Image (tube, rainbow, N blue to C red; front, side):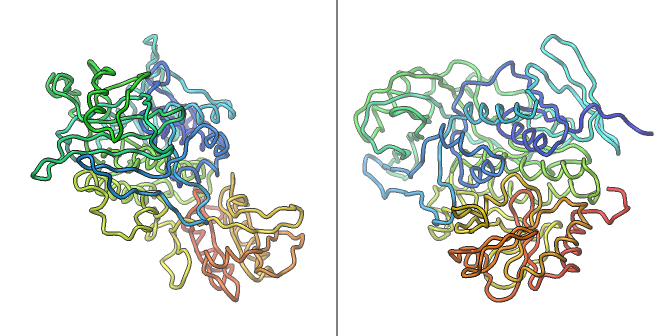
Length: 545
């Protein structure tokens, strides 16, 4: 029986994760509705840390300039223990990484992505709640309820639950959410102070008793504005949410709690105890008590329904991993759903979302819990690896069913992030380009290094398998002439591509996926090898996708 679909994808939840999913789907031409039960965006600076990998994603989406103008840099952290200054942590990354660490209030992140989404003619349907859904082999029937109480049934091809820690989608799908809550409670406050601490540095001040137990803590993350910070600290007993016994009905204790929030005097009392300099807090914009749990679903989806972000994994905010991990969930899933809607792909393409993202979620939950309990110093990685991991630049999908088996030699392997590089000379541009300039806003891209004569047959093979959905670029070694050609030719004038991608003599081809990860590394590149790889994503010609 043929079904008429009112839309292709319904996204439940309009936080940063849901907005990312909807924006990417719409950018790729997929019909999409995004609903959120809240009547308006919350004016809270909840998730504030922006990782370099998230900025790379936003670069691909065309959002980076807007974000850079709104955010503030995060240079590092100043730490104090029992009033004694500890070694400073500087957030340093290799020079080829295009973006550094930043901070931006969550409501600003949501505003920027929402305005981007509006360019595609799609607005958030606010005050609209997902009530239930039923799926079959062809699609999903979604029941919605508006603020007026009116109910609507929507037939869609897919449903994506980005509806937070208390996700209705997760519950109706029957996913488990194993884990537990931390006993500690914290309070958050968005305030200004009059100290003269270095700009762009977070402040972490702790007090431990004679047994080494942590008994008091203050964490301050800079926000846009003069000496403005989002501060977190332990909750005094009168403000305890646990003591009121008003926990959520589903037992998932995580995030901002209801009831009376801290006042400016409560925050000032902690500053009086722990601030590295005498200071006075002012201009309290908002404050709340919050709890932390660590949980992860047993699978990231089933059939045509998926979960992402806090609906799939929750954990301590250590290292600002949560929102950024959720944005990458949405980024990974959206291109797969877009291709699946378009057709001509393997029927299990969308199912690879679980295979790729759930191991990432497990690692993030385990690491953030360990760092929350023992501190980041408990990580035995060398400083550079530790920083790259916190920046989420080491996230990868080696072993995924969508990427080729690991290969030997230097440079990134299939499943690794495709690194950026500078110094690509073009035929017309009077200035060098970055590799990410070539990838921005595109789908699959085939990069052929070295022998440009191979590019034509490779491009023909890619077009035949993908139905013309793969772009091809030739990158010639340093010292060769820039020329006009089809496929387009760029010269690696600084030798950065050769160094970062581990290529020397001979031709090598790299298939870069729409999410900026390598699907294949072919050396020597042959049409047969490329065709074999593309069969992991695209269906054979003439078959049903």
